[in-house]
Length: 127
Image 1 (cartoon, rainbow, N blue to C red):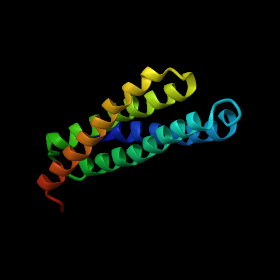
Image 2 (image 1 turned 90 degrees about the vertical axis):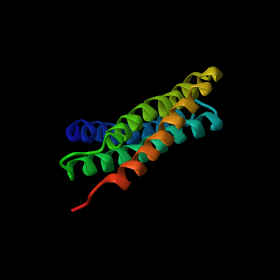
Image 3 (image 1 turned 180 degrees about the horizontal axis):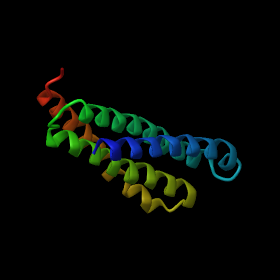
């Protein structure tokens, strides 16, 4: 599980940097200021949660029997990133407003991920 989470975290982190650069250089003249802000929120949250996923992977690697809530937290971070950031990217690039209705599902996944991480941290025995 550690290897999967580290790999996905690295991909999300790298794509977040690429998304920010894309927004700054290629989108600035092509979309509205509001769409650019929306895109930026997606990139920023993607980076935050890539780092959180990396933390989850490190915690998993430091324990012989990671709590199920820790593993659930990792998967929820992945799901949340895809739904939250993905829907914001799509919304800002297409202007299709209904895509904004999907974003809160990603936000809920993020909240659940952080809650699961808190529960896991309470259960973990650190060396």
